[in-house]
Image (cartoon, rainbow, N blue to C red; front, side, top):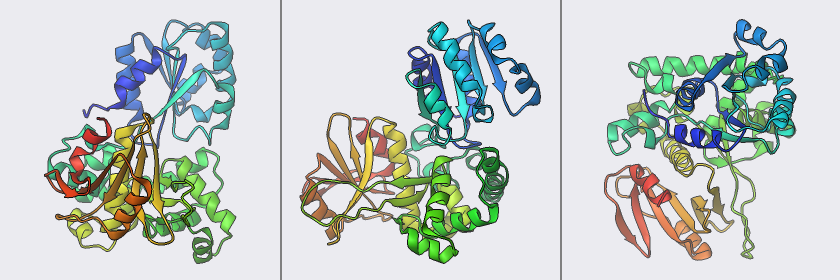
Length: 386
């Protein structure tokens, strides 16, 4: 079993909050992690609301949960029963005790608005992403190449071979569209959303242009935005905001769009292995999006992320704002001998960040001049957590 970085974070949160929410896409490993946390925390009860027998135990939730006040109660797929949220609130308010509930969901709190309204001030949420560099042998090229090519979903990454991995991802996409989204109350035709998802794969790493994408699909711009929100709320898409600061320059104000899991990106583009990936036109954009996800996984929720681009061509792929106010700039290059672009140097003079790096698929960290370093992807966590 690959130990998840979030395990210790969840245990610490359970000691400080009555309710801890673990959210993330389906099949990302939430149940496995929750069971591991529950075993370490103490006496616990596990309920999966997709199982009729477990759902029946909560026919009278107040009566059932009151009787288990001394246990950690783990409730999986809680979005299936929104009526539970007010009950949890009343039980917590009657007797405030930390570590009472660990709730798991496959939709963002924004999508499950009932949770946000009912449990405000009583819950802390953590997102479980697919496997990250820090959770595998990050320094070894075969390991991170496999992670980049297959993505980080356990079923895909741990598959016996590339063909089985691709088969798993294709089945996941179909299930997400035809079963998971309708179960969350999303009323979008699966065929329409699949066409949109595939189109986003071709636009991966580009600036969001609702009108252009809507015209290609034959829908309105608001409909395209609704499709985007749906995939974002179910952890399939990353909407990276532009950096906003008054520099008296014309800044790009639309976000950049990435598919969060590189393996799903490659499946939607029908790229079956890393050999085909390296020869594909999307390789550079895929690498950029994958490195962005690894950087954000390393920082957790402690830092803000954005990109910087001006109309004149100054650009930084990723800006990380640390809690201490220090700003880190990252250029992302799929090259063995990376060199910063002219736009990157120009952006550095605009923003004057605390440190600047060019992330590349190599092994050696070395200076590139003017305070910029070439940084192997396996060392991302090292500089982000320093």
